[in-house]
Image 1 (cartoon, one colour):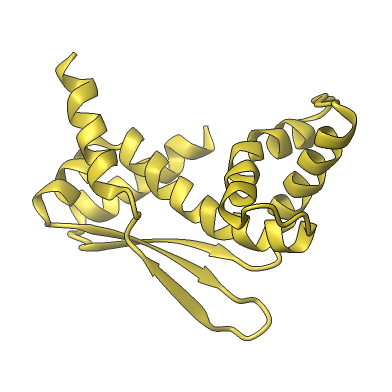
Image 2 (image 1 turned 120 degrees about the vertical axis):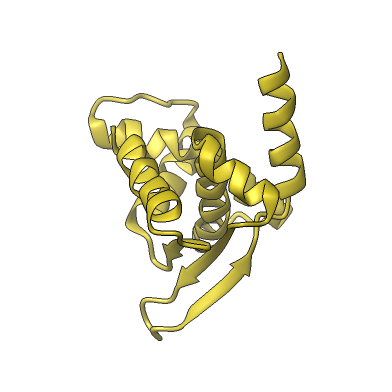
Length: 150
């Protein structure tokens, strides 16, 4: 799958090539995030959440990211505001998944050998806004240790 391919490539960079920094980069005006926002807002209005195609499944799969963006915004119902926030939420979700799926990267992050940071590329200005490490990094690393101990 695509996630396995991405994780495998990053593990090669970190483990074989010695990369010390991984940047998970999102971008503004993301069509998938905008589509997921529209799909979620529509389903919240009419109660439908039907996945008829692969695209529908992709957009519905991003629903948790959009829902978190809604919570972070505390009531903004603007689709544009939600989608903009969801881009950053999705970057951090990507970091979380990377650390969940890759034990070798997770262990190097724990030891301080590697850092994983988020960023968002602004497609209009060309600027990159660095977000830093996942705000819940200690919790994520601790959760993995607890899960592994079971």
